[in-house]
Image (cartoon, rainbow, N blue to C red; front, side):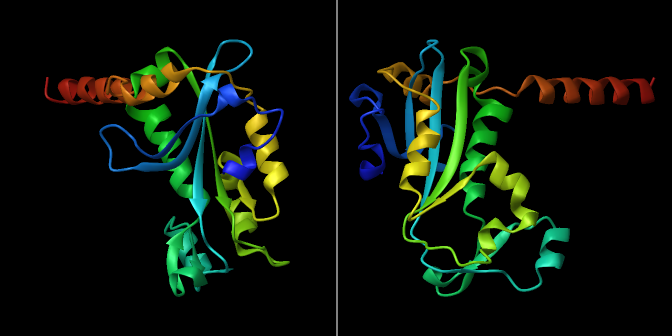
Length: 198
């Protein structure tokens, strides 16, 4: 990531980063997060999942796994074991922060993006990671490979940063509360339950 950030269009003041950052009140960790303010003074954070994978293979029985909503691949780096798709961990962090509990993400607000960086991986022609059934996940959280340093820089530079240590502080200290959609769903359920017993 140091090499990725060595770019004149990514100002030194943007490099407010956290490594192995624990998401408050969850067991999730972020490998790398870059935070700051953009030109419109909006808070931004890019979450990067780092993977050392060198070879990836499609999981056997892909159709059955997809039917069960299991999104995974096999990686030779982990001795051929099945692991979740590289995009999923960062995407799940975004969902934990944005869709569920961190009030600051909604109220300030903080714009979140995520991606995965497989810095040892050279994709084959028929790349298991970029199969059509992973497209919605890749749209949420794109994957960058060993040869994609410039593409990853471009992804980061879409959100130009300047010094804003408070962005990371807001993420770390956000009040934990159910999202409005979850509150509305619970309220509707309780109203329905109350009427069924009346």
